[in-house]
Image 1 (cartoon, rainbow, N blue to C red):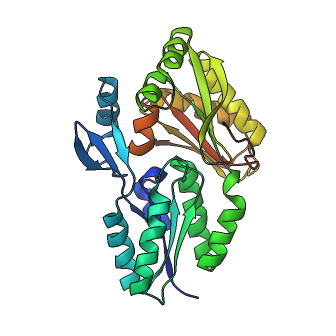
Image 2: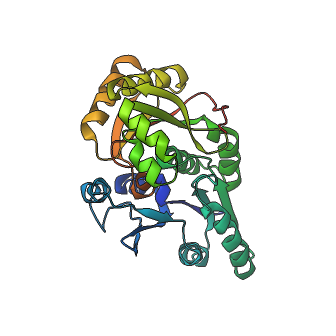
Length: 294
């Protein structure tokens, strides 16, 4: 079997420990703060999570970029030189152009390394949904599965990696252009909290609107309870600098949902730049997502 490496991107929010344990590398996107481009580093080398989200709380808009072509060329090229094939597990094409850029770069690199294979997988997911797919791919590799087998399994099962995310403040989604200004104003005024899923097309889509923060967290847990199928798996609770709410969700999950474990982690800079502080994302393997928002 050909040797291969699994690579994801900044949108996956894989922690240092996860990437080390699973042997997964990643390509960096960028964030733009005050006109300055900085790498969207998953080890938070450029700034701490608190500094990042405080910047947004202070009123500054943070924008993001996809993975630059030069980053793909550098990271992919280094592994190809080592004689390894590549499985790139990328952010949803509905949210980022990175997976499409990767396919273009892969075609160029194939001319230099015709004996190598580069697989570019559109996960239709992001944040820890994307990370869970990368971790599953790494587990399959350890089991001796080929790159083709791994990619085939992902294509058949990627919509079973669920995201349920109660948003804290609509202001940040408005700044990112995700909701209308009037929607954000009246939503915040009335205390309406949308719950967002990653839908069947890979878009982030508000499936419910709940009044009140506590109720939105409780409803998110109820949705997990209804959809989860892997009762021996780990559920990930990711947060945008709202650790107390994340603990609340974790405790509610442990009380009502059968699973192996619940882990709390940060929402990284790419997704965080759009959703803003106060967002919670719950990620788990469950029923296939069939709903597709307009």
